[in-house]
Image (cartoon, rainbow, N blue to C red; front, side):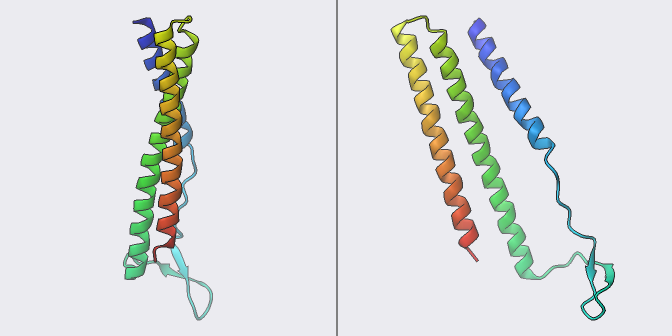
Length: 131
């Protein structure tokens, strides 16, 4: 029971720590004005209506962001599983059943991380080449 509570606390602290880092990332804002093409000076505020191609680009960026966030969470879960497998391996005290279970946990974590990285690369490649 103590191991289960320890593992849950380790997972929660890892996720919260990584969430805190992600929350501190800078936000890039769009400029509130556009340059006048004839004079080169700032003109009135940009209207909210955009051409259709910009809307499609925004939609693709939104889809890319959602997929990247989901794949990032999958990668974090895979790393946490590897950490939990390592802790289980260290605390197995030579018991063959526990060692096998810990090795399988680490193996599945590595496979999950590889799958998440490949999915991330494939999704970004496909979405950047779609026009």
